[in-house]
Image (cartoon, rainbow, N blue to C red; front, side, top):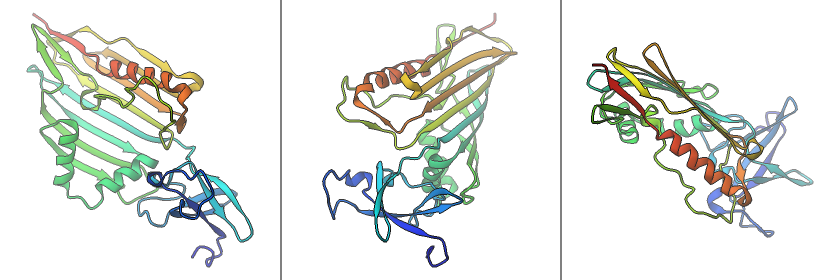
Length: 295
């Protein structure tokens, strides 16, 4: 169709992730076709079967390292791994009341791969079903005022907003001290890299950037006894990075967290650094702020 419209286009054959990577010449190991064209000198990959994708945004199932572009007289390898970082930004404005109950508003901005995956999971779902899904995912009991912006505007970030209240899951009273999880429902509970050694690469499929900006206002009669220390981690060659900064300003806790993955693949020889990175990051995310009531 594109060729008919005067846009020179070639098919790219590939093997989906679930189909594996062909090692030897094969006529059955390639199970998927996408399109490749050039726009103003830039390579553009397209998947006509994915309704929520757009230019150079392929579904995860297709990002299996390399494809083979077929032209009339030749063929060549095409890199299917995206170079652009997919981004997700969380902003939370929350309030802690005198009974240590949290309420607030959360807004998430999804771009590129995160937006594609979110649109695929949210499109055509009833609002009540989405709210229930969020309550289960985040262990929240009262989500309301849920909204989605740019759900069908594929060239725009997808924006998801909701309010939450009557939440005491992230504050624990021990003696006369309150132990607050400042990342609340966005804190990681675990990570997948448990084994001591790995003999195969770790494939993240795409580079990514995750940022968290959380502000929690405290009651006037609460004061901070302990704040977690700042932490900055960078893996060798800047493949992964993590930053965690929390401070108190005028009765508000302000937390900024940033996680970046700059590569799509981590090789086995770098696995020990990857495991250490995730161990350290998880430990920091689970640290508590200690609060006490003024007498």
